[in-house]
Amino acid sequence: MDDGALAGRVALITGASRGIGRAIALKLAGAGCDIAAAYFNAHDQARSLCAEIAAIGRIACPIAANVGNPESVRDLFADFARRFGRLDIVVSNAASGVLKPAMEMTLKHWRWCMETNALALNLIAQQAAPLMAEGGRIIAISSLGARFALPDYGFIGASKAALESLVRSLALELGRGRGIRVNAVSAAAVDTDALKAFAARGRMLREFASRAALGPALTPQHVADAVFLLCLPEAAMITGQTIVVDGGYSIGG
Image (cartoon, rainbow, N blue to C red; front, side, top):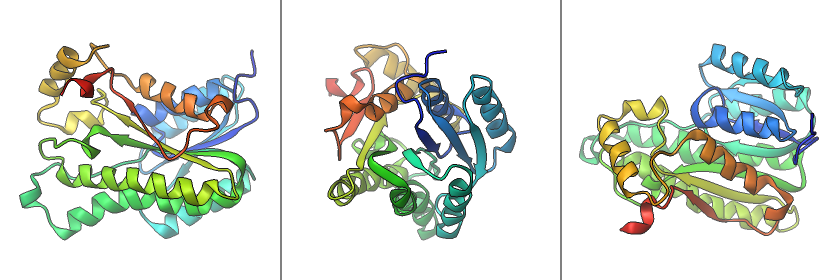
């Protein structure tokens, strides 16, 4: 088969076992990357993903980690370094949070959202940068909740806004002297298992279909395609940016 546009690269994707993370892992593997699939508790899905990637001739291994925990992230990268020894692409995709009105939230909820969705990116960047050569890519997955008020999404949205701000800071710090590009991909409502936790899931999908210029639906593959584009040599001068993938949903006001 064709080696692909990213032949010889090594990519680590967090939250890789399902949904958007799985689509990203398969996209990058199809483009020539070997894959480290980090996951929290979906062991069987992670093993299945790696078997699927191995079947197309790429190296793939699952690694368990809690990305909001500094010690766990250190262990993740120690395991990764033993298996691969080099790193070209990191996708910080793992996310979690609490879907409740902001007026009902607690400090515990705040820490949960911020540590898993925002702090994780910084922990990952600290461990990833020493393994990356010039031209490495770090890509974080955000959502439109970073910019817009969504029902019961207040703390998660705040953590995603913090994530996008951190992307800009890391782009400056890691670009100078290291040549590492840091960007985010922000997606509208994607119909994954995670979206099923939203009571308003059906309404959100119908609203997207009616408002998006390029509707009727946004899939994990669309997000994976945007991540792939940011990994290409042609994206060498893109850093510190948040690329919105929403089919034009957010441009109509």
